[in-house]
Amino acid sequence: DTGVSQNPRHKITKRGQNVTFRCDPISEHNRLYWYRQTLGQGPEFLTYFQNEAQLEKSRLLSDRFSAERPKGSFSTLEIQRTEQGDSAMYLCASRSPGETQYFGPGTRLLVL
Amino acid sequence: DQQVKQNSPSLSVQEGRISILNCDYTNSMFDYFLWYKKYPAEGPTFLISISSIKDKNEDGRFTVFLNKSAKHLSLHIVPSQPGDSAVYFCAATDTNAGKSTFGDGTTLTVKP
Image (cartoon, rainbow over all chains, first blue to last red; front, side, top):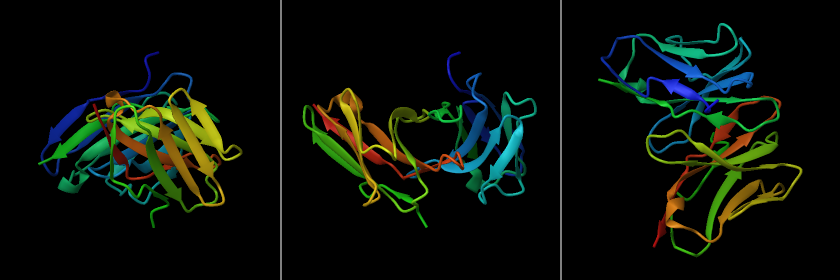
């Protein structure tokens, strides 16, 4: 296992289009987190899963955002009707309870 | 209300000298603290952590100090090397909640 992976690494889309990102966590980690990072700021929590259950969602996660982790392994984050303000780096992280959180390389989204 | 603050956006030190990065938090429920290092276009990389039951944790050139009464932690890098130049994020976790709250980062530049 080489760590947390995210695809795609970069995505350019036009305003109003839908985009979907994928995260593959470290295999033995049952917790998976999504964060968003904009320039000059630290990562901001969006949502997290324990196995397939989505346990918490931030107020940042508007109704245009949806995340799933159907089998408790990989997760997807979908943004519908993208807006220019959605442009950011989307980070995925995973961990086991009591252990350190490890991040993937991120998906950089640019909405034109 | 920013619960984790890194008040210095940037820090410049000479190679071989000590780098001290600071972080303040407000939420007394935080019980686990981490430092991440981030290069451009990459996800944050875990550096070192400390539990609230300790006041110091050391790993090679990196030492994290925690002052719970002051709600303050710091990262010391000794000796600093040019390869340490990166953005450093402080993160605080309430292990019951699981998610981490990040500061906005400090850009460290180590000059040869």
